[in-house]
Image 1 (cartoon, rainbow, N blue to C red):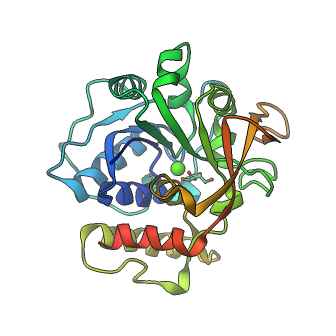
Image 2 (cartoon, rainbow, N blue to C red; image 1 turned 180 degrees about the vertical axis):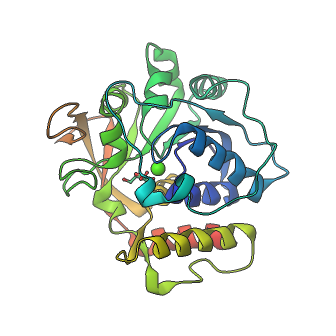
Length: 299
Ligand code: BDR
Ligand code: CA
């Protein structure tokens, strides 16, 4: 069983990624930490709590809230992509409580409790993860790996021609994480833009009548309904979870990575291949990746 902390800003594709992780027998979720990004921190936290309750009601899954804004500078949300309240579909309200500690404390605690065995899967701006590492070499040492959905290395960005959303939102934190010395797998648009579900494959993108299959289908149906011109739903964050479960679905090159923090190229991931702590994903086994996503949500 791989121990994971999922740092996330749900978000439609984050929600699918959480469904996968909650359904996966090979992952033990040490905690879910929320960050502002696709939507406000209040919305991403509420969405995470409701989603956990809806699909894993009886289970004790820690959910902790983190940063509501990047380490520095301006920021914006992506409601135009993810819909009302950041998810586009309603989930029943829940009395499920947040963890007493915040996201930074949860990441540090869980990593230090099992040194060398906790993977952080980061699906939003890297603000919480960078803060957990800041001034704490013991925490950096204890984290086994950080799997990041973010960046556009050899391909254009999706927020600007130079930058992908998660990195653009908090380039300072991204740069700090990539230079922290912790092993990082960087899963950017190079591979996530090849990994998608098509509008015309619905409305049963996920099979069966489980809560997760029904919720997954509702999320995709609503997303396609609200964006009439869009034919593909990109599996950005689900691919990160799939790769944490089956690393071989990616082909990666080692690199040093830094991030442009200001100006027209803000959020650009600058890659120097060779030795380095970052595995940059450049190829993906699309068929297998989509199969992993579908299987875990269809259950
Ligand atoms: C990333 O940005 C967010 O909108 C998605 O949830 C994903 O994490 C894709 O650029
Ligand atoms: Ca996300």
